[in-house]
Length: 192
Image (cartoon, rainbow, N blue to C red):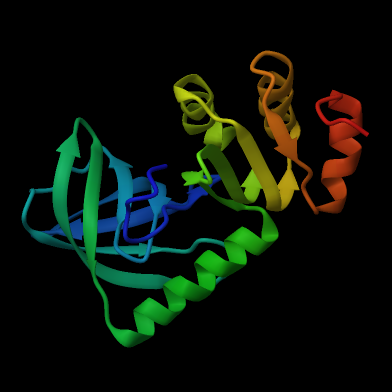
């Protein structure tokens, strides 16, 4: 959620499966978030910090992304990693991230200071996968929510907006996606 990260972290409304392999052991995990720099994966398969491992996953399409990464941190079964990218895997990642955002299946949430106003910006899908970050942003103080780059909103996303508008009285910039107008009217969280 921080605007200080080198690469934006994308969350998915359905967490993709990740096949993992390290030191001859293999297992499965769930992709918590993804960026051009690395991924965060939840897995029962123990991974050693500071060591490389292989991972395979598919975000949206049938394109299988096969990348080597290094484990840089761990909290319980949640591992943060840094990719060891080549030019082909980097391009595959860029393409899959762009496709996930344009389809609304991937989401990026950021907080930015613009002209002394704290603005929360959502790109891609506004859905339940953003609930924790969205509510954290509301509680730390947001002056405006910019949904102009949202490509899809589900009912959980509409409920987040209703809470922002009704409970926190935050101005919401109207999204451009067609489905959002129907959900926004039903939820009643945008002014006409």
